[in-house]
Amino acid sequence: MDNTVFDRIRSDISGNDVILYMKGTPVFPQCGFSAALVQVLSHLGVQFKGVDVLSDPGLRDGLKQFSNWPTFPQLYVKGELVGGCDIVREMYQSGELAGLLDEKGIAYTKAA
Amino acid sequence: MEIADRIRRKLTETFAPQQLVIVDASHRHAGHVGAAAAGETHFEVTIISDVFDGRTRVDRQRLVYAALAQELAERVHALALTTLTVDEAIKRGNSD
Image 1 (cartoon, each protein chain N blue to C red):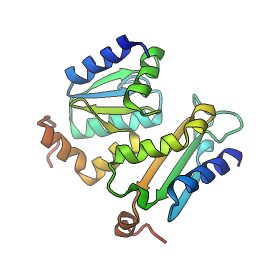
Image 2: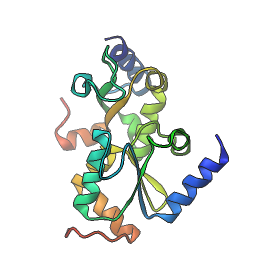
Image 3: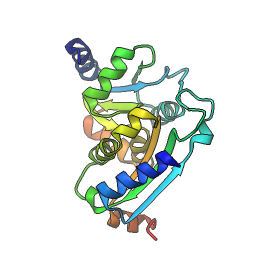
């Protein structure tokens, strides 16, 4: 894989505390699983950057390799892959996601 | 059932699961991008196996994705995964 794609991913995930690689945009998700994660992050009131992988096939393929994860969405917090739809939804429901944000010092508005 | 059978065989070989549930949810995604007319594109899989013991959620799912790399490349568009150890499943009251 082209190193420039990996460099771009590294710079994106280190420059954004919470970044969601998704199909479509937060306003117009193109996939139910991506929409579900936008909803989770919105419920928590956490600020995040959404990146549409459908509009960039090179990025989409690069991320699958970079993350060693073949599907989207992919949620990164502080440079680390938290998971896809199942994992993040489960962590949200159990309160672990809020715990992770607390631990990483990331602000969110929803009261615990 | 061809893909579902392959999924069952590979997951059984890799995880020797205590319980394995594979649901073909393709009909709920008919017409979506990635949904083939013949179906077998969207699956919901629950695996209860002690292979997951001591592994993070991300590592567990990577193991499943690795076991099904061929199916994901050929046909399967989405896999919704629940990966539990036997103890976790008992705590959830999920085990039979």
